[in-house]
Length: 329
Image 1 (spheres, rainbow, N blue to C red):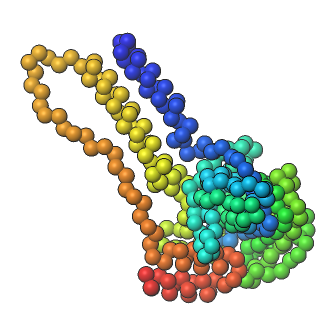
Image 2: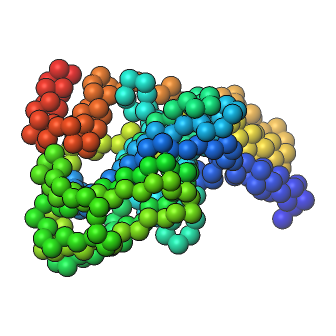
Image 3: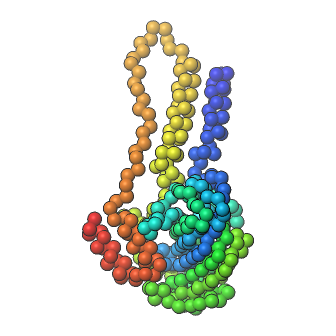
């Protein structure tokens, strides 16, 4: 290998090493500050609208300190490895879901830390509502199904409600420990509830679930917010690429790398004497499209989905309202 080619290779590798920590989708940003949840709710719904288990985290966080927690501080949650993220959102003042680009960090032991940047300053005692929804495979197999659900707090929690919903057609549904309260949700499914006070990140909550069910058929069909795509508002790394603060540095990196390669190759070329040099064609640089707005009615469908999950409406009412929204749009 010629000396110039070696130098070129070294420069490219150095540039890659300096940039990889910035452009990698799984690198977590630095955390600072702290939040505390006044109320936090975890809903665990095996075979609800998917053969896997639907889990929902939602709660009101506050800034317990005396100094403002700055915009771009991370909020983080621990989820099972391999989980499919449905929504990772801030809750707006109007009750809507403002879903954010997120990063993930593998913690080992089948755990992943999911984080996103807070989009506004949080003053002392100011609320910050958050929402996270995901699906994961709990590993249970028919007909005698069993799995262990473990919740790992990442912040102090004044009050934690853990709800486990039994699938339709499940029998012999048992939780260990026993639930502090049982009842029915808005869809008539058996509900097993637990309450915990003053939890810290050291206080993991573990519940074993056993039940009998001969198949993996979910209790309900998965609601849709589009003609073909299932509900999903946060697309992780793809969402990050749609924002200028992520896209522009990556495009600059690609442009610099391309320039280095072209410069190195041209320096090594020795064209034949008298060879005709045709006009150079201009290369069109990478362009980015400004992210488009959401389709009309999408926000209404998300709110309707939330009302269904919160038990404020039943499945029949959900389907009727969803049909009316689709007709209006």
